Length: 360
Image 1: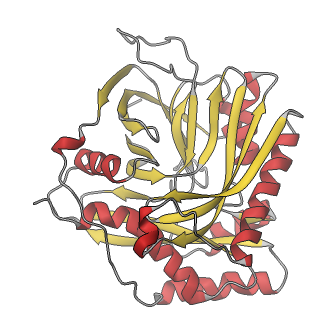
Image 2 (image 1 turned 90 degrees about the horizontal axis):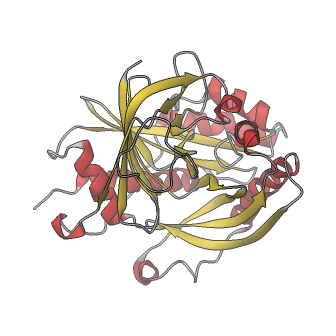
Image 3 (image 1 turned 60 degrees about the vertical axis):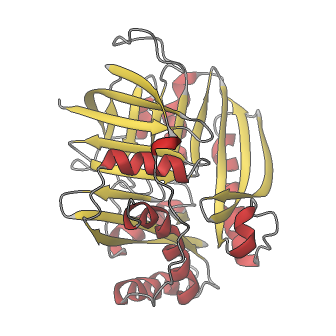
């Protein structure tokens, strides 16, 4: 066992929580029932890429001080043409859709940015907290996963004491010009985006029906995440017993928002054919069954209550060489190469903006 840490901030808050402790490894999401700690799970769970839980041996709390952070101007990056590796992947994935093998499949990519700028991972974390108040921000290190920073809008599972929620998040548009002053209320959605979101929402409803008859769906509605907007449906539900949490996670992960339908076949196709391995991108992370507030003297085994698990989107892994940025997009039969590439470029800007702007 080795020491690890997670530093995170929930959306629309200014409180940062740091969890430090020994790590546990798990082979299945279903094993997470009754477990307490900070979870980081990969897209594909393997022996060399396990679910890792940081035990809350030490939990501390601090407040984000925006006054000490340098103001960062909005990015006006111009996106280039699709890379050859992405174009090959797109042609391969899209051919499967045209042949009727999938209703939807998600294609992801990885972009490398060399180290530079003199910012530590912790400084990047606090910069993300400043820039993205609507998003879940987390900086995580374990020996198994390495170092990851994420700024994600997508809830996988959130709740406590039997009252729970999850969301269906799909469809993407970039905000530009005067639209950046609002919450995306003027967005007009294409048929492709509406269909993609409906696929995800239907799948989540079918998953919840396996565990509870007491759930409610609201939406879809437009929500903003950084300089992008998405379509979102909210599900609230109750569970008869908390010992089903692991089984529910097993059913939900990965959702069609990061995988596709039929789920099992899409998952295997992605693993076998995607150019860049996803690792912990499009997995999930967050506090699981952890105390909602930090006790005065945190001890191992203190009372556990709240869960805030998020899909690991808009993220990057950090190593000595630099930054490995990840993004993806859902493909349907009418998807077009150029548009899908532009969508991934827009999503990559969430992390690029953190590392490319210099501190004055």
